[in-house]
Image 1 (cartoon, helix red, strand yellow):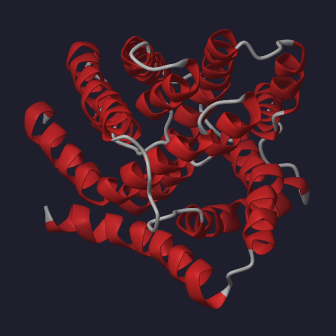
Image 2 (cartoon, one colour):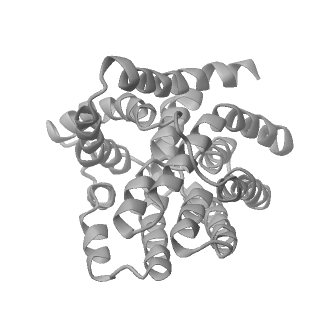
Image 3 (cartoon, one colour):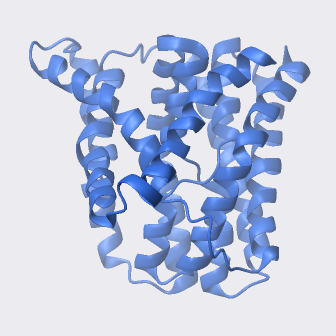
Length: 303
């Protein structure tokens, strides 16, 4: 138990460092927004490109990894969508996002902290499997519920730098270009900077003061995210019997809090951005306890 908490602690300390810097040392919203954009447009795509271009895409573990992640994600989406019908479209979209979406950056950081480079490699593949499907599914459902125009959605997905880097990584992998001089060296250096900066940005975006939202939609989102998602993942792991490292990375994904990008999407598509901010903050803070508890409980059940 203690090794799990010790491995997870630095990740959450970086999040709290970001929160402390935003509230005291670096209060400029522009600074943190620029860092968010740097991570989103440069650092994370570089990390995805390097890891995917060098991954073993012929591994049979990809099948079980995909089955567990897709099955648990779509179960959480279904529950989130069902629960969201209790509220109007704006509030309901926050419930749905909160129940199903996850913070990819925390997943990658935790996978590396707990399992080293092999764990990070599997986590990057997991993110590559999920990121395009998650974006298409959530944006489409929100568009349907909120009545947002569909014209710009496809364009946004095509321009998504994470999706583009995943595609580029797969192409380079298939062509055998997994160690191009200079290109992979530069991308590798950029990728190393992604996780610590993004974790601090997660903390900087937390708003612990003035939280104002109804408790029911927040609880509904937590039921989908912290109960349904991990339960279905554990069930699918039991049925699929993947390698233990693959299974543990899947559990990490299933136990994550919702990602901060949901706030921007909610604001842009006409959802309840204030409620979404509350869901993000509550889930992230509670995950300090729920995430290691879920990992330990799943280990007891499965291994």
